[in-house]
Amino acid sequence: MEDNSGKIREAAALLGEADAILIGAGAGMGVDSGLPDFRGNEGFWNAYPPYKKLGLNFYEMANPEGFLSDPQFAWGFYGHRLNLYRKTIPHSGFSILKKWKDMKKDDFFIFTSNVDGQFQRAGFSEDEIEECHGSINYLQCASSCSGIWDASSTEINVDVDTMRAKGDIPICEKCGLVARPNILMFGDWNWLSDRTHIQHRNLLVWREGLSGRKLVIVECGAGTAVPTVRYMSEKFLDMFDSVLVRINKRESQVPHGSIGIAGGAAEVLNSIDLIISDQMS
Image 1 (cartoon, rainbow, N blue to C red):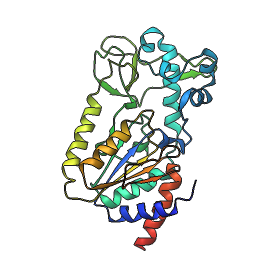
Image 2 (image 1 turned 90 degrees about the vertical axis):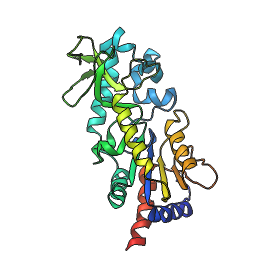
Image 3 (image 1 turned 90 degrees about the horizontal axis):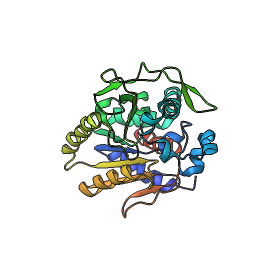
């Protein structure tokens, strides 16, 4: 990591004085926990070599049509991800954010494009998170005939050589068709957004209480390839008298007056917290 000491001290001072904190998290947030980076074809193929042999990229695998045309193959990919996310331990940066949340009480919210449920695993409640692309920990019918249900009892066995699911895969109890993760995929007209809409309403209610308060936006690992989180961060920046702290290894550029720190989430969050702790001692 480059010398960010001045920016880290500045971020720590702002966070120490903040009345409220909004966390924005993209795919880079999970990298420090050991989760794969799907950035570009090579990143995806490094994580899943069988797809390189088949000439398939992430955009083709993250396609809802596969659950109807070849459900065992589609569940091979998503079943592997489900199993991986379940056994992944959130990195220390999540604990830092939970510490800050406990300090700020209700003046804290998370907006993430990640579908891995790592914030919940780190101790955050559903009421303080918006997962704008859904979650792999919930299921829906592939034809969207029914509602959304919890995937905690779902077990998927995957042949890692062929990346095909072995044995039973989830089905919709209403129509009998294959079920799929409640994740917004590419070209996805059947995604059920009810759960995410509830989360978004929670965010809007939280936002109503920010007027006249010192808001700091801390964005971790959100790139420009899928810019949803960056858009939300900058929308809040425009709406309130706030500052954006953008933590990103490759794309840390920020609007004028904000702080861009080139580095990984775990390292930078821990560095900021060390200074905050020193200031409070």
